[in-house]
Structure formats: structure tokens, C-alpha cells
Amino acid sequence: LERGTTELDLAGRHVVVSAGGTREYLDPVRFLGNRSSGLQGYALARAAAARGAEVTLVAANVTLPDPAGVKVVRVETTAQLRQEVVSAAAAADAVVMAAAPADFRPTGVSDAKIKKAADGSAPTIELVQNPDILHEIGTERAREGQVVVGFAAETGDETGSVLDLARTKLVRKGCDLLVVNDVSGGAVFGSPDNEAVILAADGADVEVSRGSKSALAHVIWDQVRGRLR
Ligand code: CTP
Ligand code: CA
Image (cartoon, rainbow, N blue to C red; front, side):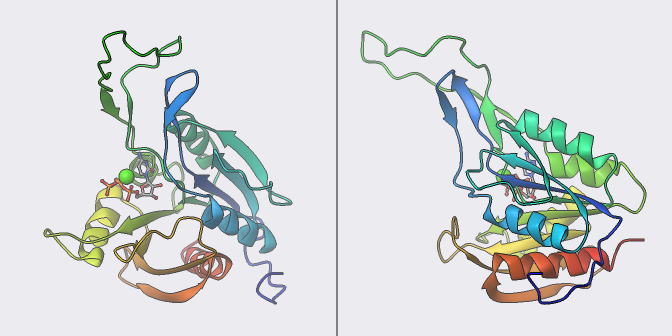
């Protein structure tokens, strides 16, 4: 086991983890996407499997190999991610939304490849907001006692500090835990390391110092484990 312990403290539990970044298609060959690597979500899935959980990993455009002993469901768009996460959540003790769904998608997807205009004019891409999957899972709760975890990368702005904005987001989304990364110092995409604060709806926040994404994953599962019935 990754932690050097043999404790199967998630045995008999079913958990759902989402990972990666969604793609929102403009036409058959082009999309709007983001830089999420899927590393943290995959680390979460591996850690849960190592602790005995039955794991469903909903992976959006991740190029990493399937973790052993994990059911991997591959998706591309936010609509597909939502469908698979909501469906798997119906039987889950915990749901962790580590994926980065695109906030917006093009209003329509062209069936044909978009061509350049003869007059050299640039097209305008009209966007519509995507459904908020974490908000749906957190506020509707498929099962009583289900533990719901979100992630947030924040910089802070004139309306509030990183932790102020994150606390507001935790409440708005109705989740039990929100894993907060301070990204004001630069991007963390694709990095093997992570540091975070885990905000808790019950007020028992946990600070996690810089370490591997696997180490952070185990701390997150420790926090989830303590809140399972
Ligand atoms: N999330 C989600 N569905 C979306 C957008 C985000 O489930 N359409 C989840 C992410 O997986 C993450 C959490 O919500 O666990 C926070 O994502 P974030 O982008 O910080 O939240 P947003 O509500 O999109 O807020 P912002 O305007 O700051 O981007
Ligand atoms: Ca967002």
C-alpha cells in the first residue's frame, strides 16, 4: 500500500471520483478545453482502491493509464461527465469532484468543420453556461449520509481572500469538504505535488502541507472516512 499501512478502512464502501478536464466541441475537430491533467483525481482513485473501496473513476480526456482495480468511465464533455457522475453517485458512499468541468460550452456544435470566411472576418463563439455537477450532487444528495467533496483553485480578489471565496463556494455548492488550492503564485497543472487547505462544512478544517498528490489523496480519504456513517 502507498501509505505503508494495510488498513482497508474503505472496504465495503463505493466511491466515485471525477478527474481531468472536459472538452466542449465547436465542430467535429475543435473544442474549448482546459489544462487539468487528471493527476489528483487518479491519485484519489488509486488511494481509495488501495484502502479497499469499490471505485468508479469518471475520467474526462485523461491520458494516464487506468489504475488497477478501478472501474474507469471515459467521457469528453461536461454533459457526459454529469450523466456518468450522477448515475454512479446513486450507489455511492462518497463523491469527489476532482475534475475541471468547463464552465461554458458553445451554444451549438456545428456538424461540419467550420471554414474560414472569404472576407477574412473572424467568427463569434456564443457560449452558454454548463450545469454545475457538484452543486447538483451536494444539494440533492442521492443517498442520506453521502459525503460530497469538491475542489477549488482560487487566487483571491478584491471581493475576498482565497479562503473567503472558498468558504462561500463550499456553502453555495452544499458540499461537506472543499479542497482548496491557492494558485495565486502560478499554475500547478501537471505538477506531481500539491498543497491545500481542506475546508469542512462542520468547521473542522485541515491544512495539508506541500507533498505528493497521493499523500493529499490519503488525507482527503481520512477526512471522508471520518464522516461516513
Ligand atoms: N464543478 C462542477 N461542475 C461545474 C463546474 C465546477 O461540478 N460545471 C466542480 C468542480 O469539479 C470542483 C468545484 O465544482 O470540484 C469547484 O469548481 P470551480 O471551477 O472552482 O467552481 P465554479 O462554480 O465553476 O466557480 P468559478 O466561477 O470560481 O469557476
Ligand atoms: Ca469553474
